Image 1 (spheres, rainbow, N blue to C red):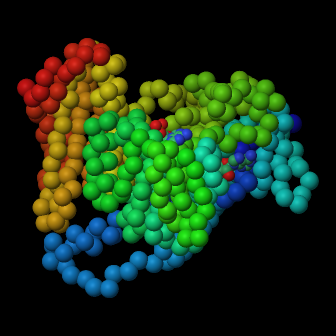
Image 2: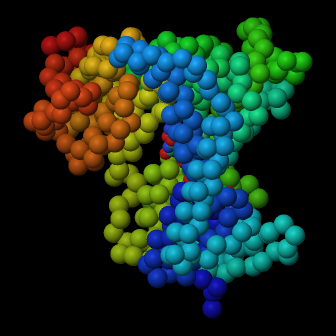
Image 3: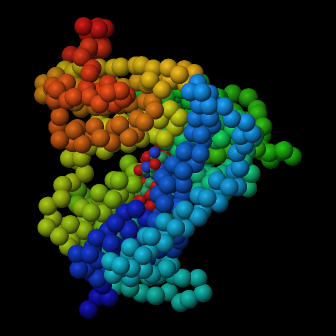
Length: 468
Ligand code: FAD
Ligand code: NDP
């Protein structure tokens, strides 16, 4: 007799969802966690990051308030108070998660787990002999960790795990990378008052997003004060009396207090005993899974950042629900391929998107059209801010379906989440046109786009021309 029906390794987004819902379905579940419950999202990712992003937005809010008649004096920012408030909130959330798991009947085991076979897991807790657990199924939900930088002197750089508890707010900061984490933290520390230099190897940040929309965000970040060094790479970091000297490959040298490296993440599958147990990993260490998230070992499943190249909490949650449905439910939940995956970058201005970029649509669809709207949001008519918003729809001509929806500007993530439902439901441009707007909002722009900005006829061909 096995100890339980399901052993879950890792109490992050995917692991907690799987353990809780499996237990609620009547399964006997053991959840093993070596660190704080809640994983990356709660402790070192989405939640603390968004709290810091809110903190950083107050800088512009105070500036803009003057346009609405407010005046204020004696503004000051206290980094320690923000850190303490964040820490208290995260501890509260850890408790909420633990209580939720207990209420569902999940047995939480503290320690680091390693697979010892298709049905066996060894748990090591410091100061105690390893414990063996057996389960009918095992779910690997161990998430990921920051990738190590390749440049010389990389020991002088910190990563995103270390950025939340910096002893002092840096006055000067270099951020290496042009993806989600680099752009979000460049924006956050810029908002909090640091002089930020973002160093990115490409010609534009946020590769993979619609390039027109990413360009809009890039322009907005620079307008807010982030100094962006494009087509640049760090060659070497060295310690100085005041901070860290950064030398770029083009020979430029500058000094900052802190260097944050954010050049990607890797799956946390090293030392897990997966390959030894017969569970295939790909060249980058991700667990290879099929559409049902089953690994090459029939009893072992994987979800979240340990197996997926799209590292987003809602995706880890959806995958966990899918596995639990397969093992302990009706097995009717759809595979990821059928899902629209909306996403947002919490920069200032923020970016949010669902579906295909214009670049992807041009390759995949023979004929389509693009609608764009760039405008000054009502708030900024008085705020004094030059900020503008950009919204964009990509439409497949053959079906009239909206296949891509993109927004850069105030409230973009909140707006796109709602429209993602329409896209998941297969809404056509005609349906968007028939939808009554809410006035005055920025979101109504998506329902009032009538003028085609560009069209394309077949893959790889240039646009047919400008406005029709
Ligand atoms: P994780 O949440 O990473 O959880 C894995 C857990 O497994 C951890 O608790 C770990 O301690 C534990 N573990 C690992 N190995 C073992 C072992 N051997 N034994 C026991 N326990 C183990 N996504 C969004 O959707 N929106 C955002 O705004 C967002 N912001 C982010 C900001 C940052 C700075 C980062 C780093 C990530 C962000 N993400 C965001 C991504 C999101 O956090 C991840 O996609 C998500 O947490 C993945 O969930 P997971 O369950 O796969 O893994
Ligand atoms: P990303 O993949 O988003 O970005 C990595 C960046 O580092 C890219 O700009 C990449 O450049 C650059 N890079 C990669 N390797 C090197 C190198 N050797 N030298 C110089 N630059 C390099 O990863 P992040 O670390 O920012 O985030 C990891 C994941 O976490 C994201 O993919 C995302 O899924 C998730 N996340 C989600 C958030 C959200 O939902 N808001 C927020 C934060 C993280 P290039 O573009 O040229 O490849």
